[in-house]
Image 1 (cartoon, rainbow, N blue to C red):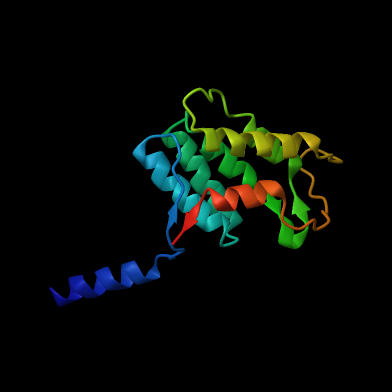
Image 2: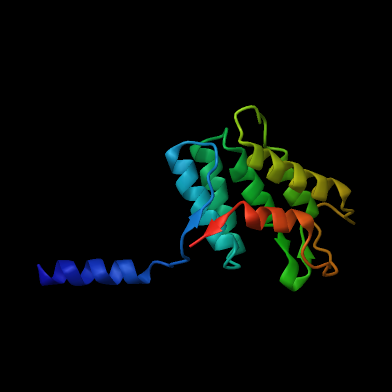
Length: 149
């Protein structure tokens, strides 16, 4: 019994803990769970892990548009001045039907699509430096619509 308890504690303590997030999205329960996990990874600069998690969320529910939005966000690394514009556009292109989405989800998608459409790139999948611009009205709007715990 003691060995079982010790292995449970070790397994639980080795799993990354990113915190909690209340960010409702349209999708099945597994997609919603994975979306939140991906968002927490994304905001912990775990871009590759977040990418894989958002892809799993999209597979769990192909109608979960925010899974593809989240995946698109994994291609922007502003701290390192890296952007993968073509990859972000490809992720957003997977969004097919937005009729079931909440207004906030539509706003997040519209902002991401406008951002990616307006950006230039030099070659497909290229990483290009970006200049810091500070908080935008979209960032401020996103922050006010999300609750971090």
